[in-house]
Length: 116
Length: 109
Image (tube, rainbow over all chains, first blue to last red; front, side, top):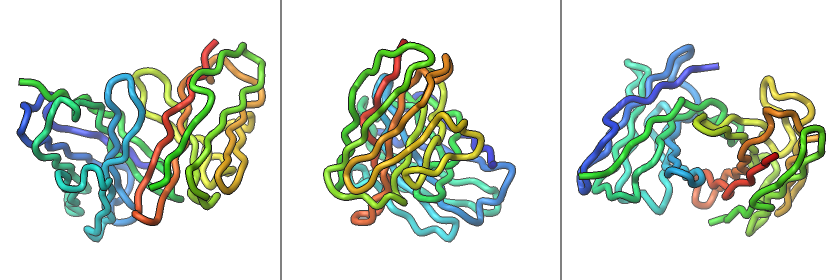
């Protein structure tokens, strides 16, 4: 079982870019699919997108125009960038490992607040 | 895009009772692509069931999943105090590819 840890700013201003990194330990990133999922306070889960270690990606159509997920195999990390954020992007952001068409392992989550 | 509807929104039960949670899809879902999660306050979700009926590593056998097509069920045979939480179903779609979650069912005392 791998461990995942999110890192990045907890506060982002409206219209700016949200950037988060997920560090994978206890296993190699060079297999499996890796994903970002978010959860607004008091609400349900929303899938943002996933990336394969080779770099191929798929994004939630509702966020696709603002999202980029990338991978750095040398650092065993993958990253999320979400542009032009608004208050609606305030959420706990989870990084995760996919397998068997499900989310096998989750990071602890990091709260990102969008506010001036 | 497939929409997952979970019912009931809240289930009020006592320890030792049986819990039956429903997840209905707007279109047929392959059983291989249906999963269930448990989330306690302040914690990340945890995978319970994948492939509609396969228990994840370390999940006790009081949790079971069943169903096919558009109707799936998570059953907790005898509720333990630690089972009171929010439960989500999730499906993997192929067109477009990606994950979709249901709105959740809260199991409360």
